[in-house]
Length: 404
Image (cartoon, rainbow, N blue to C red; front, side):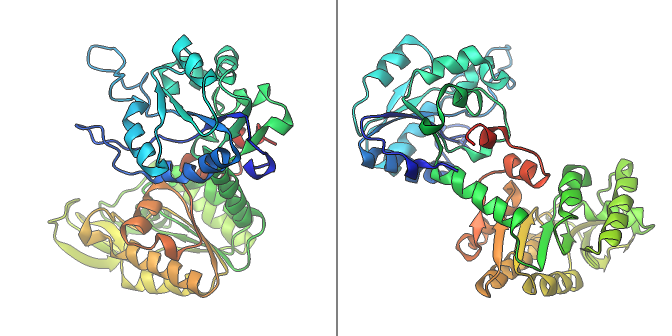
């Protein structure tokens, strides 16, 4: 794997694919979470320190699929110009902006860049050719740089023009992984290919259908799979349990039974929550009680794991050498139902302090460790989202393959 450390960027323009798909305030368009921008800084700074210049390209949202009421593209809402102030503040220097990514002005700006200067191109997804992986569009983007750096792991699962096709126009010595991309791949590979044993995967979230492929792949390498969140109730119903009005995918009951059977065959221990925090409605002001997870009364729904489940899950987590956590244990964004997720987050942090390697990935899991102030207490927090999930499903990531 070639990274930016393998190149001296002196006198070179680096075309860098970053992931600036960041949340913006709906009214002011101010960046509300700068995590992804911060993650790109080490790569940008390395190039600048070498004496190179940087042309940044990214997408923001899905402008061609989320049109205004009159059917036109909302250029203002999806413009990367809104990230400029945050980027300049974090970099500590002025950043130039091109109001398009492939028009004449953009090429004039990029060709005039001097050592130490940075240019940000406008949203790639204003062109349908980006998501289609169009070669002609990619060839135009290539004109912005002498070398290509991909530091957008969050888009590595997409065979888009800027993430994959662009790489075809650079020789092997002129295309490299950025620091973030390299770190994401290395940490994911550590879990999936070199996990210390026992290896415990904690899988949460609402739907079994979203996690079937991950669980099936993990059955080949994990020792324990802890299942929480709304998806757990599909497993309980598949076993004949009573789950009240808890979330359940009735069309996935056979899948759930199959996963349990495969785990038994392979000697993998699947842990479901013994008990649940239940509520009579999906609301903060609901009446709350606890119940065995397979004996939830009619009219009640499981919205979090309860004390016995927490204790059982914690015991397994603390005995593990490798931990993968993807998905919350309950509706953690509602205060009455966040205790299970908090407890698991703390258990993962404690296991990490005891020497385990822990990787947290997936939007809700990452949001949880951030919210509870535990980001620095786990080994690695992935920015990958969908890319990380597809990697754990055993799929090849086009954005990674293009650089190898």
